[in-house]
Amino acid sequence: MAIDRQAYQQIAVELQANGVILVAVSKTKPASDILELYSLGQRDFGENYVQELVDKAAQLPKDIRWHFIGHLQSNKVKYIAPFVHLIHGVDSLKLLKEINKQAAKHNRIIDVLLQVHIAQEETKFGFDAYELQELLQTQSAELQELSGVRVCGLMGMASFSDNTELVRSEFHQLRSLFEQHRSRTADNIQLTILSMGMSGDYKMAIEEGSTLVRIGSLLFGSRN
Ligand SMILES: *Cc1c(COP(=O)(O)O)cnc(C)c1O
Image (cartoon, rainbow, N blue to C red; front, side, top):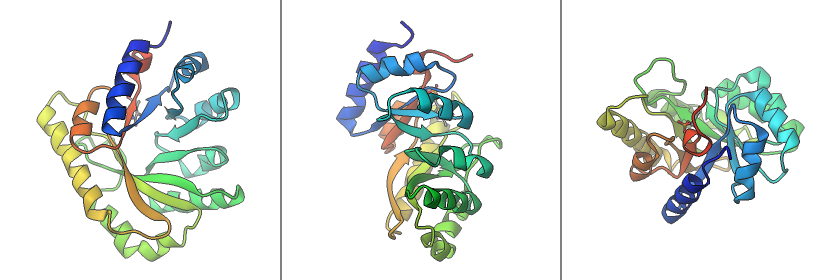
């Protein structure tokens, strides 16, 4: 048996008690693993690569809610636009415009999260605090014209570090930005989801106010 059923049940109960959504991150794992978790009731799954997501969605049950959690290139939006449930890693106005365009082609409104750069590592993507403010305030009119996208919240990844105080402060920082911008509502802007926390740090993320965690290796085992 490939997945850790016991871990799943335990985490699912724990998250439910806190009202936190679980996205099971299935990247690199076979469709059979996803089906196994699906049979236990899991419906939200997260993938990082467009081709892999498209392939899996084609062969798995249609009521799965697919979350795209990787770095999305504009030229690949069209492949996931027909069915994606939530795009987590949106990091530019240009990408929002492309999602809007593709959503219109499929007569959909696509839900997205804005990725915020909270970690110390340079390699991670996302808006910094200033750019986020600029998008939601200065460029707000332009954003509101994009009726094919709905900005539902923020997403972030903490530093990959054993320094728990550092990780906690990064989550805290993201939560503060979330609270700070929550009052900026419009037809297509309603920040209700705070996507933060992975296998190694989800408990801390929940303590710091996460409403959605993305957990892979604890459920599916480690990746190569
Ligand atoms: C891979 C990945 C996860 C899951 O990581 P685990 O440590 O296996 O839980 C969560 N979020 C993002 C953005 C990822 O790329």
